[in-house]
Image (cartoon, rainbow, N blue to C red; front, top):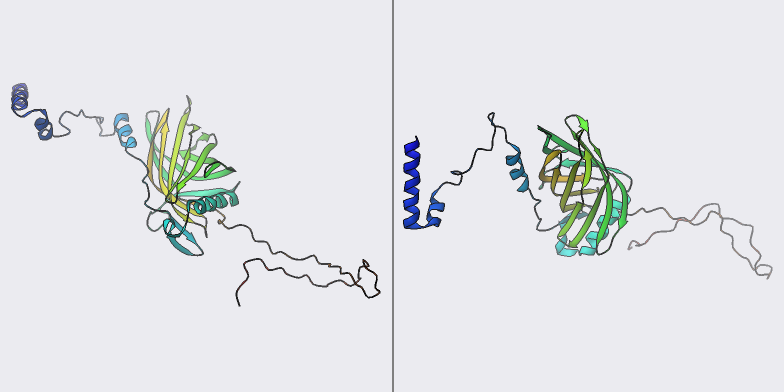
Length: 288
């Protein structure tokens, strides 16, 4: 076996001298000089897991689909980035202090496949899965230059345990009509007895349903620290309220006093009162 290896190396040296290094590089298989990064039982090691996580980046959508009045269309056809920004602001502001659900979804049908998203992680030396199924909005603040500051509290569980996480300071940025990003600066979770784990989230939004309060997009979530790992895919946020502002039924006061000039004396109120209130129609008025 040793003689065969020496003979093969001598052959490579001769070919390199005659043809150059680029020829040898294109001829040798990619995994010839790659060491085995798996354990004896075939499980992936930390190096293999890290390499897999680095390749998971959120996909950039070509256009954002917006649904309003039960009709859906690409935003770039008839909307502006200001409309996208105002719609998202109204949607999150209507759901302030509310809990919204997070699910793994289909990017075409926009329906949930699971009631949570799954993140392969290693907690210490134990491989397991982390899950996020909902989050609560703590505060919504209008920022500068088409940004919205949102405080979120994610519910992260792993191995049947609930992680103790700090609030996430998230930033929703609408750069243009087909580019809306929700990202955070990283929040800490207590998942092991020693140290804390930092979690970073990026969501590239490609679907907004103003009628039912749905937001869809491609996500990438990474964990670093005593528990490390992460994943990417497509998720959907299901907010309890839609994006339309409240429309109260405006009414005139029940008692409307009118002045009378029967006795030719101005300023004397009449004792007659309207028994029924008068409804005031809200604009826009319907065409007849």
